[in-house]
Image (cartoon, rainbow, N blue to C red; front, side):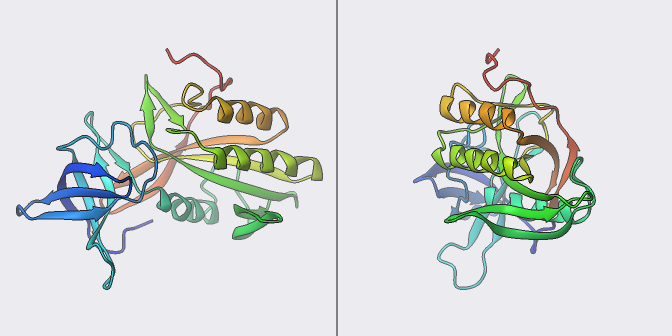
Amino acid sequence: MEFQTPLVPARLVRRYKRFLADMVLEGGAEVTVHCPNPGAMTGLADPGARCWLERAAPGRKLSFGWRLVDLPGGGMACVDTTLANRVVAEALAAGCVVGLEGLSDLRAEVVLTPGTRVDFAATDRNGRRVFIEVKSVTLLRNGWAEFPDSVTARGQKHLRELAAAVPDGARAVMLYAMARTDARRFRIAADIDPGYASAFDAARAAGVEMLAQGAAITPRGITLDAPLPVDAGAQAPAA
């Protein structure tokens, strides 16, 4: 996925009200930008961080949207969680997700149960229906990329609904898309949301496939990278 316009570098002053951030552009101008991330953004919103902004379409209230941030140890992270599905859609269509190669009839925002949609549905090489839900992962602690970074009742609901699809003969997949380039392994942040950890364990036991994919991120665009190992137990200790 390539950004539609060149990104503009800036320095973060502060993030506030979840969806707003004050930035200083390289020329010294101060701007308020849209922050498209409702999560905690742990480690990604420190004052002084070098950020990358995209100019908004004409008519928008704010002139810029926050897209990327440089990581202290090198590499980059994408703070815009809305981009994950675009990145994954391109990867699925190109057959670049290990375990999900050769899909056909790929569609987005498909009804899974009444009142519930799943991010993607497709048919695999064996003719089985495949339902795929995507989560953007921005949190890194103790060498582990982790999800979620805050309590998510909606995320628990997605896991339960995927698990319910398995007995009908479908494949159900939870795809954790890394939104940072320093991720090497993935697990569930059980201490942040014990309810999500329990739902994760139950869903995996029911047959939901748990996949994690790395990312390549630059100011030009974002693509999925190599798959990452998923920890065998969501309730693993934090050390």
